[in-house]
Image (tube, rainbow, N blue to C red; front, side, top):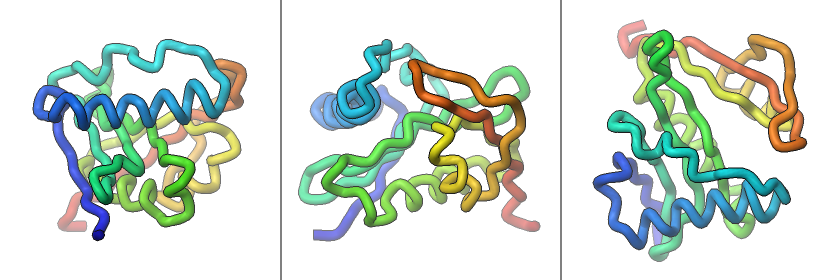
Length: 151
């Protein structure tokens, strides 16, 4: 079966699919990385939040969350996660490209786990502040400008 890429605000997602998306995030960030923290932070419910995901054979394989950064009308990418069995297929990279297309002409920020700084650099993100610990994991703030489609 072919991988399908989807996106929707939380309110438009079938409850079973939403459960699958949230479970993937908990499986990766809470269980696998052994970080007990409030994964469900309320931001998924913001009216302009969008969930993006890759699915195959009715299974969610990867996900990304896209938020509006209201401080400066930029965008924020987060919750980039891929199921362990689906890693190495480029699914998260595909979702990043889709997310960045949706951010045309806007500043985009994310907080990367420090060991993934090089991976995000592939998408022209640069470190733009001092590193920090979040739930015991080193992170770095990163940003990039997304050129307009006419550039």
